[in-house]
Image 1 (spheres, chains in turn brown, orange):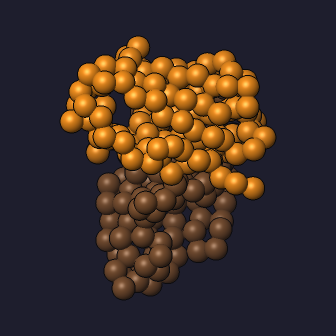
Image 2 (tube, each protein chain N blue to C red):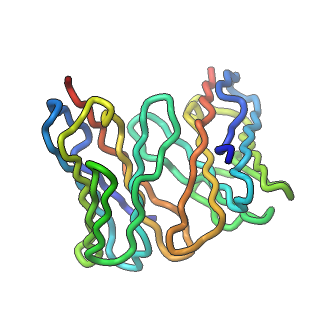
Length: 111
Length: 114
């Protein structure tokens, strides 16, 4: 069993603020790290998948980095908008194995 | 391309009953995974099916079982329901394992056990 931890558990930011959250995972036997965005009453939506140490991915105002040696990934949101309000999940996978999800960071962007 | 569908979306059952949930993956996807989410918990992995075979299994009691059909549709069964089984059950499909192993989630089935 992989222990994947996310912090903070919840976050309230003002519209226009930039923010970031952390996903920590065991670095041994690492295979891939996934970020998902989960809006209320919708399905979790894949944001990024990263596999290599130092990977950086970007989609619009959202970006993510990966450090496999120390076992963490950061998700950044630049200029938060109310539509960014959602729970952001990360999941770590081992080769040929299941996804291990963190409990998520709940983001609320206040207009 | 149609997304992952799950039926029913909501379900209320009584303790001791059994329930079957259904998941239809994206066309062409051969892997289906099932997850349970309860308040305060992350998505807990139940099992994964690929080409009608269970490939991985999480740490859940034997009351939780599943199967996959030749068209990749999957069902999950919970027997002798307990109050603690009340949860959101999500399924996710993927083409196969690869470097990205991207999973696409359905909307979930909300099960309430009374």
